[in-house]
Amino acid sequence: MTAHSANATDGTAGRATIDIVNVRLFDATPTQLFEAFSDPEQLAKWWGPAGFTNTIEEFDFRPGGAWRITMHAPNGADFANESQIVEFVKPTRIVFDHLGPMHWYRMTMTYQAVGEQTELTWLMKLEASPESEKLREFIEQANEQNFDRLAAHVAGVTAPGFARG
Image 1 (cartoon, one colour):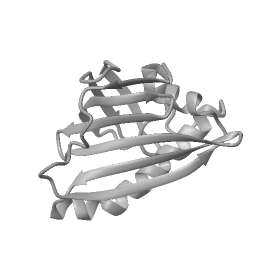
Image 2: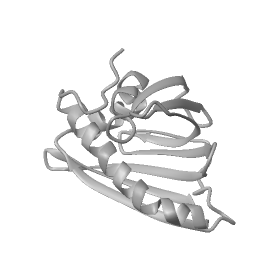
Image 3: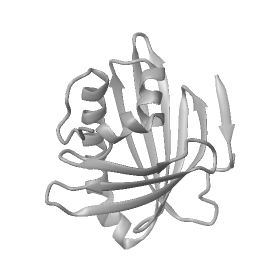
């Protein structure tokens, strides 16, 4: 196990947060799920809600490294996102901060082996605001769609909105 960290604190000091938690059991190893995120070629294929495709402009997977992605919605809208990798422990944990442009959140992803499967937990600490509270239900559903796409990806099946190339 290799640990890498730029900041061991949870990054939410002085911030009120709304916690959104999604948990699912996957037919994959912790290493397979970890690599599905840490490898930008794989990440581009499954990240985002159903129907989205992705262009990853930058993915520097190290503590303090930048992650810039444009998510392309089925209706043609583009959503540029900027994040920063905070820390990771291969293959059990990845933490990143979503910096903008719209809302800040810290995502902690943990990968726990359960027999032949892996329980993946996403803990999203979204900066509290009236807008964030309105987004809660959408985000919970979008995260579940993300999980659907990840499950299909690790199973070797083309997920809805699969980005080719």
